[in-house]
Amino acid sequence: MDSTSRPTLLLVTGRSIGFAASFAIAVVLARLFDPAVFGTYKQFFLVFATLYGVLQLGMAESLYYFVPRQSEHTGRYVCNAMATLALAGGASTVVLYFARTALAGWINPELAAYVLPLGLFLTFTLTSTVLEIVMVSRRKHLAAAVTYATSDIVRTLLLVLPALVFVSLRAVVIGATVFAGLRLAGTLILLWREFGRDLRFDPVLWRQQLAYALPFAVAVGIEVVLINYHQYVVASRVDTATFAIYAVGCLQIPLYDLVVTSSVNVLMVKMAGAPRGRAALAIWHDTVCRLAFLIFPLTALLLAGAHPLIVGLFTATYAASVPIFMVWALTMLPAVMAVDAVLRVYAQTRFLLFMNLVRFACVAVLIGASLSAFGLSGAVLVTLAAMTVTKALGAARVAWLMGAGVRDALPWRRLAGIAAMAGVAAAPVLWLQHVVTWPPLATCAAGAGVYAATYALLGYGGAHVARRWTTGEGDVACAA
Image 1 (tube, rainbow, N blue to C red):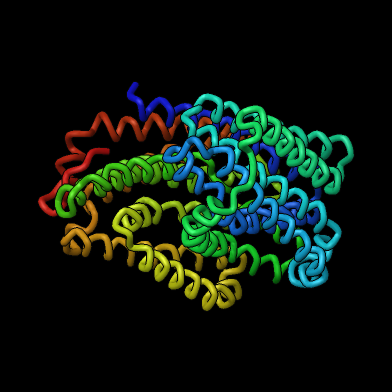
Image 2: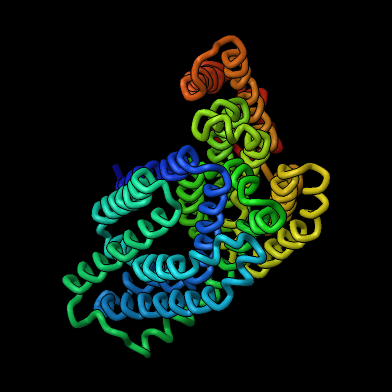
């Protein structure tokens, strides 16, 4: 295993364990609480996730840049980041407290009672964000992987156990705040042992960090708002029980995030050293094909198994989430084009901003009408449409940068072949669901096994036929 693959595998393994543990939180709470209480829980963490994404200000990520280059100042860089994040969290807590009435009127009156725990949870979590980043920046990949996994497992326990004992949302919120406080205390202890008196604030280095971080922070902040905007619109228009139905429909798939993030990171490294033109186009097409080879079948499987998956995990109470989830699963498809990574390689940050503004405008203008016409699924439909439009614009821009026309912009035939295989492989899953009467999760697991076997048979057993059909003169060669 090469020097790049081993650290990546360690981190992916640690994150995967953590994701699996965290995924269990929503499943347990959905079964324990009634939809109204679970909807309030989802809204609490919606506000948290939005503020957490926006208020990082790029300071924690700046350590990836500064620590490897000036390792002798690591303690001061870390302290600068933690101080900034603590200040941002504290300021947000004050704002949340004074805006609690407005927040309650906009989304949910119940949230007003949780603004102080929310602020503390946010502040503690923000400040301790640096822990794994410091480890990765100093090439302590195994320690980072273990910390990722352990932290998420402990967080799961401190949210789930209070819920099981007290059957109370307040107990869950307190458990989350206790976890964040313990994590911050552990972070401070570990960093003090590592850096000692060098863990101190340095105004000169802080200004350097801030100058580097703020442009990145603006882009990330816009992206975070874009990702969550549709949920705020729905939350402001429906009761909490209905929002719980919508939130379950917008179920996050951890495997998707891991696949896309890992693939685009490799793409950016490869393209950074490649000249523009056919060579760069081939690298892009290769990544697109690899992403499609994983994302297309994952999407098809989720579409085919949506009902047993949602009902099996969240009970029949959330059966109305199934059509929402089916549309939500389709939002994974535009990411296959990987245009954001390519545009970042070519420093097309203004065009990325333009894409985000177009996407936001599409959602803001159309979401009301889409909700009225299609119900809760309409909010996801307009999100899917906006993502598709902006990714298409990005793909056209990338093709132009590489001097390619519409015919060569993407490996069209290869993508069509992969899509066909993914769709055909879903047929046995649908048949299985029609003929068996097993429990939903058993049906879902069996369907996944049948799908994997069918897709593998189509992908490998019929590889020669598939290549002849899907590879044409207009495609840049790429392997699945």
